[in-house]
Structure formats: structure tokens, C-alpha cells
Length: 348
Image 1: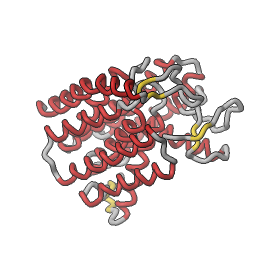
Image 2 (image 1 turned 135 degrees about the horizontal axis):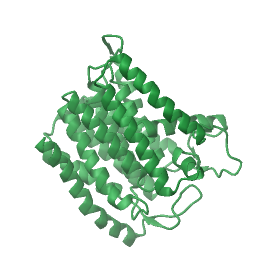
Image 3 (image 1 turned 60 degrees about the horizontal axis):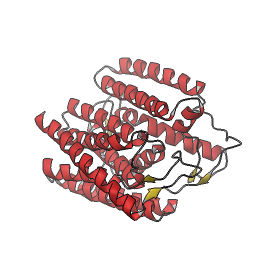
């Protein structure tokens, strides 16, 4: 337990020290995130805080964990995804180029043994994926990388959700005796929470695409070492619940844009957090509402990993029914396009 706490604390301290330093650099070189129709900030905010998150995670991993073959692959892939994000933050990348870079980063994991090899059949036994595991791993990593990037739309939202999700994955990993996954999850949680000190509304610095994609990538790869490597019946449900809000937001965005005849790569202001604000929530209130939902889903993931199939199914059904009703009342699931909606080209 000491080393778990040490990993969390070290990542927290490193990010806490580096974030103000990077903010000064961003201000000196004019690296600002300026207000636009698809953003909620009313004034320029320094960008590039993702480097502090990256440093907090990577330095702690090097100091705390043995440099195993899988860890080498994760660190290499994480560095690639960070560089893609930095270029996107500075110059802007087309969605296709960014997607290609994400696929390359995900492919980097395979030779190092970071791969989803099986899923557990809830009705007994395991389903070994063989070569299909490579495709599923790429889809999972690229998908989660983008879900976190999609939800990074309000001050503190992505950092807080990632801290909650990584905390959930850490607890489940401990339940299953997955030491490496527990360490990595706690390190990610420490760095995310530390950045939240500067990023909660009103934000003093943004993480940028570099930070959002890096966090998404690290959560996706960590879950392949932990929950998705577990032999329990919850191998799929646990990480999906832990990352439930960004996954749901991404699926709704895909359905909404497809229904309205827009490419998936076009941005809108109809994400879950935007709809909460239109429903009357304040900026902080919308963020806290998403935090609360993420915490509920995280608790459910931890609980159902320890109970029988019938029990977890009923608990999950009850929770999703309550959240579904609340989302319906708030218009979260509406797929029609608002007449006044201002859709602009997505450059994430």
C-alpha cells in the first residue's frame, strides 16, 4: 500500500510543480486558447498543460515501476500520442491525419505485448480473440483516446472524469491482484487531480488536445493491463462503466451527427455538458453533475465486480434506468439538430 500512495503522491507533486511553470511559458510564447463559437471560455486561456500531466505520469512510472516490456510500449505510445496532440494544439491537424497518428500509437503497443487477448463469457468460460485481439485493441485504444478528447469541453471536466475513472480502475485492479494496472491507474489519478487544481472553473490553464488524448490513451492501455485482463465475468463492463460518461457522450455525438447528415469530424455544442448548461446548470454545476454521474458509475463498477451475475445485472439495470430517465428529462438523448446550433469544423 505504501508504494501505491507513493506513486499517487509523486505524480501529484510533479504535475503540481510543473503546471505553473508551463503556464508561464505558454503566456510568454502566446500559446493561448482563444474564445470561439464552439468554446465556452470568454477570454484567452494559456494552453499546453498536457505536458505537465505527461511529465507527472511518465517520470513517476520511471521512478516507481520496473521498466518492463509492456511499460516500454505504453510509454512509447503515450509519447507518440502526446506529440500528435502538441502539433494539433499548435498548428491544427485534419481529423484524418490525427486518426492515423492515433492508430500508429495504438499499433506501437502490439509488439510490446499490450493487447486484449480474451474476454470473459458471462455465462462461463473465456473467449480467446487470437489475431482479432489486435484489431479490438486498436479500436479500444483509439476509441477511448477520442472519447476523452471529446468530453474536454468545460473547465476541469476531462481531468476530473479521468481522475474518477482511473481511481475506479485502480480499485478493480487491486481487487483482481493486478499490481501493475493498479500502480498505473493511481499515477494517472494523481496527475489528473493535480492538474485539476489549476484547471477547475475558472481555469487558469487548459490541457489541450495533447493532454486529453494522452489521458485517454493511458486509461485505455491501463485497462488492457487490468480490467480487460481479468478472468472475471466483468472484463468488458468494468472499464466501460468507469469511462461511461465520455463513452456515452461520444456515441451520442456519432448518432446525432449521422442523423443530421454531418460528418462525425464536425463539432457541435450539443455534448452532454453543453446540454446541462442549456438546461439551467451553471458551468461548475454541469461539471459537478458529470462528476457525480461518473462517481456513481465507478461505484457500480467496483460493486458488480464482487457480486453474483443476477445481482449485478439488477443493480446495473436500476442505475442505468435512473440515469436514463434523468438524461431524457434534460434532453441529453435528443438527436435532432438545434436550429440555432453553430457547427464548426472540428480541429482537436
